[in-house]
Length: 113
Length: 113
Image (tube, rainbow over all chains, first blue to last red; front, top):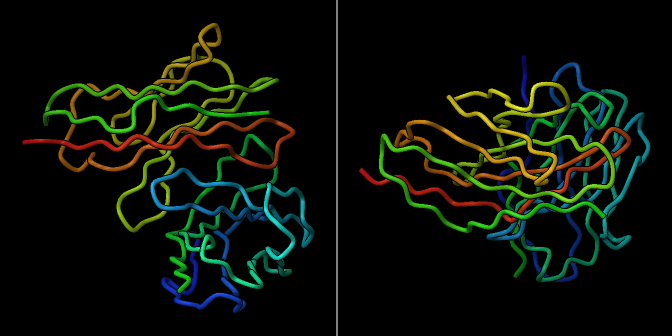
């Protein structure tokens, strides 16, 4: 069974740039959720994708957007990067439903200069 | 609104000693509760989950947790800690019709020889 994989592992950008982070879901999973984890904090929910559509969204501005593809992989796009966007971005996959445990990748560490 | 409180920011325990991590949640309906562990530079690994039924749940790596509805708590325990248990531990809450997990701020566990 292949777990959740994320790329790239690390990324350095400057303010105002745009970034795309990628996630391949675990085999058998059809739902992908994205979380932002700032240093020293717990993960914060960004949004979830199911059937290639956004299924729910946390308290993040519209410059955070995403996609889900037919093979259930997903992208997180962030426009107009700000210093506060520096964080570990975690992708989690699951079967659909709140009771289904989410399985996390190792994350992408994004640093904004 | 759902939320999780982990009162202990940092716990130091001797190898072989018992460990208990506290978690209090706020959720308007029947909660689904999870404990995850995060090692430095890695993603989150699911330790155990509670949906319904027996309030004492067993997880991986010798961990167990007890759900107490009257106290809105879901504390994690391990009878005998190993040096490899040093990590960050996160409690999370979700629900049946919920698409997101809400995480606590985490508890850092240090194991001394």
